[in-house]
Amino acid sequence: MDKTVLVIEDEPNIIEAISFILSRDGWRVATHSNGVDAVSAVGARKPDLVILDVMLPGRSGYDILRDLRAATETADLPVLMLTARGQTKDREMAESLGASRFMAKPFSNSEVLEAVRDLVRP
Amino acid sequence: MARSSLAGSRIRERRVMLGLRQAELARRAGISASYLNLIEHNRRRIGGKLLLDIAQVLGVEAALLSEGAEAALTGTLREAAADGALAAAEVEAVDEFAGRFPGWAQLLSTQHGRIGQLEQSVEALTDRLAHDPHLAASLHEVLSTVTAIHASSSILVDTKELEPEWRDRFHRNIHEDSARLAEGAQRLVDELDAGQARDATVNSPQEEVDAFLDAAGHAFPDLERGAAPDAVIAAANLTSVSAQGLARDRLGRMAADVAALPMARLVEALRGLRSEDRADPVRLAAALGLGVALVMRRLVSLPREVTDDLLPAAPGLVIADASGTFLYRRDLPGFPLPRFGAACPLWPLFTALQRPMYPVRARVQMAGRSDGVFDAYAIAEADGAAPGWDEPILRTHMLLWPAEGAGEGANTPVRGVGVTCRICPREDCAARREPSIMARGA
Image (tube, rainbow over all chains, first blue to last red):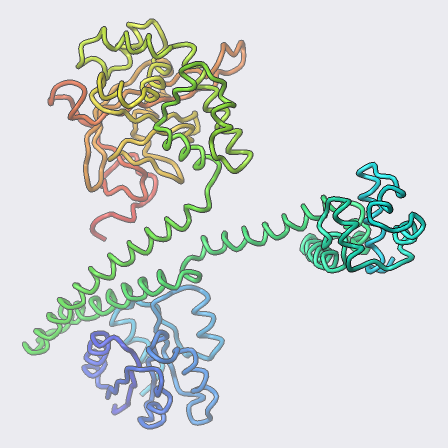
């Protein structure tokens, strides 16, 4: 398959678990754990999908998503948003900014896997 | 009429209200009566020292007469009118209204501000996550940790033939995260506690009166000596009119109880009983030839020194009406009464409502951390004088004692009860009406 997922998340053990599951499923996984230079990390890695946490140190996931959607090369990049707050408001915010999918913590491994497979058809 | 021209009208209004003649006001302000007449008819502008002098004579803030205050006031009134979708013609009359009825206008404006504040606090209370960053942060931490544990543990369970190094690694991660979760959960509890303390400023009249009674230890020596309830209330620091009204009702009832059963008589009756029988209000009522509920109420109003001398402990008391709403509470440590929402239906307090006038006695164990055991005596009686052919209004009473100091032997059956379903850990309870947030297992 040889597709790359970039996980932008600041919880090391969540990163580890997601990376493990995705790589077992045949994905190449890159990780990044702060918000400040997340956009340039996306530019450098050119992933096929981004898993983006909303609450990141330095910069909000919403701001990062807004920048990604504004740039032509990442305007259509599939982005799976993760947040610890499953409130309607957050979901609406994510959708209005153009998130491809929204997932509230705590989520299950299979949900993540399913979403990733769904968003990037091999 | 232009807004700036209104100071004169207001001066006239105020002067007439005070019954002051134009000539008199002019003399005291140091101007001629004809000049004041021009001002009052808004033919001359007024400001500076003269406005201050006139305001002083009229006994009002100069700002109230001046344009600035007027503009601010009518601004608020216009806002209120917009919120209330008032007809345009009415809104046009705002200057006249503010000019003619400054007191009412000010009241309306103050209340409009107050409504705004209340709306804000309601919003803050209903959406604490959005308004309380500390709480949101703690919750985020807990959810993140739970997610990490969940993800790691399902890998351990779901992955067939997991390499030992990976297995060890996820085990270690779960161990770390569970320690973090324990800390995070504690912080969350602290945040909620702190929130409760902050919310305590949003007091209902009922809570205000409860706090007042608690501060007095529910004993009022002045009432025992026959003082009027109003004298006691006057000395109390009750802010709202409704709290004062509630306190008047409570203390009025206490005064009536004092008259029906003076303390000296109660103390004498207590001394006449064996010490192990004194906790039993039914026995005490029989000895006195009086109602059980009255005796219960009087037992909690005894001063500390009498309680220490004659009773096994300071008892707790709850009084509720037939809807289950608490009307009176004297808390007993270890037996918390819910602040909001209904209590546990298994309490003898409610059992007693099923058989009015029949006393109920039960040993109960409160589910929770302390699992305290209490002896409860309850009775529902009709409130007030004979209602004639009207339905009697029942009030149910429950007197509580810590069980180690009162009641019979250890072979009394114990009934398990809780505070309220939401926070009750008791599983398999036939009386459960909603799930507990503390239930163990999934």
